[in-house]
Structures are given as C-alpha cells and as structure tokens.
Amino acid sequence: MISIIIPLFNSEASIYRLCSDIINSLVDQPSDEVLSFEFVLVNDCSVDGTLKECHKLKQEFPNFISFYDLASNVGEHNAVMAGLTQCKGDWAIIIDDDFQNPVSEILKLINFSVNNEYDVVFTRYKEKKHSLFRNFGSFINDKAANFVLNKPSNLYLSSFKAINRFLINQVIKYKGPFAYLDGLVLDATQNIGVIDVTHNARAEGESGYTLKKLMQLWSNMFFNFSILPLRISIFFGLITSLVAFAFGVYSFIESFIDSELPPGYSSTIIIVLFAFGILQISIGIVGEYIGRIFISNNGKPQFIIRSKNK
Image 1 (tube, rainbow, N blue to C red):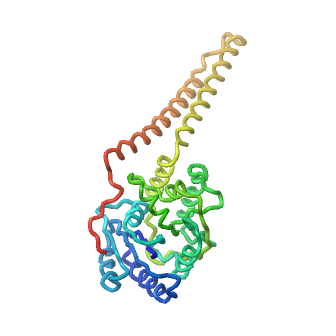
Image 2 (cartoon, one colour; image 1 turned 180 degrees about the vertical axis):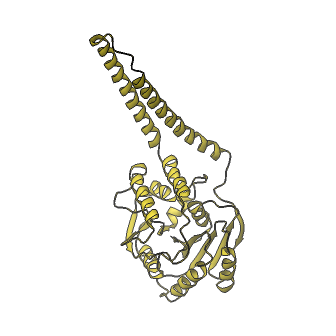
Image 3 (cartoon, rainbow, N blue to C red; image 1 turned 135 degrees about the horizontal axis):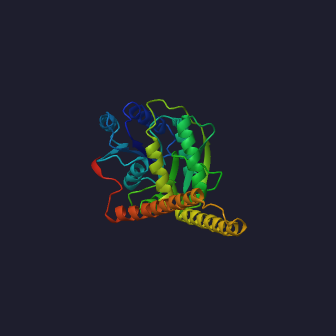
C-alpha cells in the first residue's frame, strides 16, 4: 500500500486538481506495481477554502481520500508528522500541494521506491524552479545540515521523498513539539536512495515559507539534533579570552617601554563590549536549549487534530 501525504496550507486553488490527477494516473497503473493507495491530507489550519475542497475530494473519491483538520497552524514538518502517524501504507510518499512535482515524477518516485530496498528515497532536482528567496534558504539549510546532521554533502534534503514503513515507525516515536523530519530520518537510517526528478515552477499561489518560518525550521535543526551551537559558544569564549589575555600582555609590556603612555580607555571599552556580546550570545544559546526542554516537559503537543474524515 502507498500512502501519499500532502500537508495543506491555503491550498484551495490546487489541491482538488492535484489529487484527482494523481488518482487517475495511479488507477491506470498495472496492478502488480501498485496494489493500493491512499491520500492522507493534513489541513494545517488554512484560512481559505481548503477544507471545503477536502470534503469535495472525499465525496468524489471516498475510497482513496482521508483528511485531517488541525486545530492550529503547526508548520509543514509537524503537519507531515500528523500524516505519518495516521497513514497505513508500506510506503509514504510526501509531496507539496503546489504542482511543482509533476504527476509523472510522483509515479516515478513510487515505482523506484517499491522496487528498491532503501529506507528513504530523496529526490534531486535537475533544475530547481523555486523563487530566489526559497533557493537561498535551501542553500543555507543544505550547508548547515552538512555540519549539524552529518548529512552527506551530495544529498539534497528535498521535501518530496518516500519513506518505508520501518522508517515511518521510527520517526513517529518522536513526540516533541519541534519536529524536523529530515533530522529524524538521518538519525534513524543511513540506507538512503536518491532519484533525479523534474521540478516545475509553482502553478498556484505563493510559498508559505516566510523568513520567520525558515528561521524556526533552522532553529529546530540546530537545537534539536546537535549541541554544535554550545560548542561554537565555547569556541568564541576561548577566542575572547585569548584576545583579552594578549591585550593584557601588550599593555603590560607597553607600560615598561613608555611609562607615560595614557590609559587605553577605547581599547578597554572595545574588549569589554566584545566579551559582553559573546557572553550574551552564549547565554541566549543556553536559554534556547533550556526553553525547549521547558516547553517539551510542559507537554506542548506536536499537533492537535480537530476532526478526522477517513
């Protein structure tokens, strides 16, 4: 069984045509390749007519469509986690709602995944058709993941991917409120496949990823899967200490060479402000970790499903 998971946010203009096109294409596939499939639609508290379109799809394709309406907006990764906890498939195919992944490439990913023994199959775009801002964000995310998650440098963490049942069961064990799906995947397996696919320009609407949401996503990657920020703060603390020590030695030597040398007020102020800035950054990093522990221990949910329509 194949579960196609689609997180939805203000997807009124695209979701009906996307699902109906995929369903019609899958129905035409040979039965020995795809035995059965389901769509798991997760409405991430959209403010347009997305929920109405989900009801419309359920009425027209009752055997294929399940949708879940979330009580609050939790972001793409938490919405996908909601879908993974509800799906029944041997494989979960995760796609966006914007038609940037053509139906033919979805079928290609399904056939490649079920005919190989990888735990996860990431897609790699021959040519990305995202906006300049989104491409820049992806570039930063990719380079950061190389260090934070020990990601192979040639692996692109695409949101369009396939995950098998073994890995689904491992990923959904995470119950914290700060989900970063790719981090959970890379923590759980190294059995990773890659397939090249075509990427289209966005057909409808605009990307839901604002600078704020990208920053939240990056913070989930940095603070949930690594202590690298703490190590960086230690490094800067050591650098600050060395600079201060070197300046102290220099001032001591200068006092012997030129006994009338005026006190270095400017230099002292610069050193103090620099050290204070590093201290504040370090406290902020530690505070971020403690705050996340506090929020998690308080039982903040990863998502809340308001209603189900299976």
